[in-house]
Image (tube, rainbow, N blue to C red; front, side):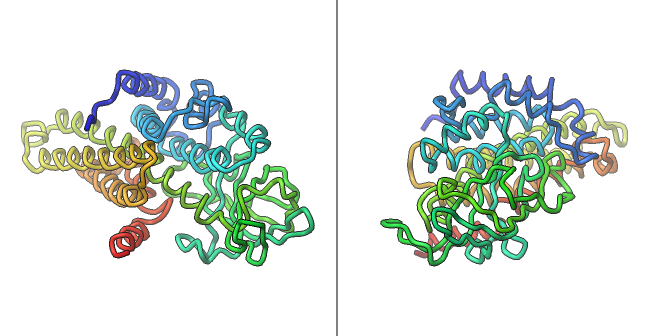
Length: 386
């Protein structure tokens, strides 16, 4: 088994790191403090192809697989120190655009994918509800057939890109609706342009971390859409679309966490070599040196686990177990490393002037978003015991 990155992948990583240092890192701290999404930075990502990374070339994207898309997000996070941008970009790609590419009709793909790939439009995904997070079976938002249209009602929350997106893909309950050969009932997905009558952005949520990525509620009040807005067969969205999106999210989006871990380690090494205590650099103290060693162990093991899941996805192999293991493990390692980075920096690590301070706030989301670590263990244990 070859774990080495190809020359093309190494070049991709280097190019994105340089882009991120030049375009993304300047102002990253300010965007975090203000909780501000920067459209100019987003558009710059579009100009270099990042907003279409895993979208097919026929739709204007780069056609990258899971490994390369995750690598791009890792490089962007490492060079840019803006986890919020990585979150918004990842959500736009793998749970905003990818469901349309995988399950949309030719008409839907032509209508949405070119503008999503270019970054002109921003994508978002709506499945979580105020009273139903990881328990997607409890969704109460509903879609009721009305002739050749549907009437949608309900509220979604924790919508990454909600305040700025142009296209929502939303999953609602459609019990009682049927389609020949589809099985009927269950959950159904719909594509909703932002200007759809009855659709509105609800409360904008003030997050602890990833603050340059805007998050909000999305409210549907008697939203009437034609059947052509439906994404995929009736009643199949929870499994055919929802879980597929989660596997993309869990094997690709966490690339941003890996980039953050690498940058946190590099910054901690540099600080430990420079900071003096008792007449010598603190790197010479075993307690600090061992923290750095633990951070390196966490980083490399998490990176390998994530890339293995992404590789299996690219090979068309079953990867649900690996995706859930990566999600749980990378989240734990990212949070542990972020905590260690602050400890190594001491009091300065707790001050907002140092990037490691926001690193902890950013890392915490990796244990929650896209399915909590606890839910991943439920999935893993069920597969083991099946």
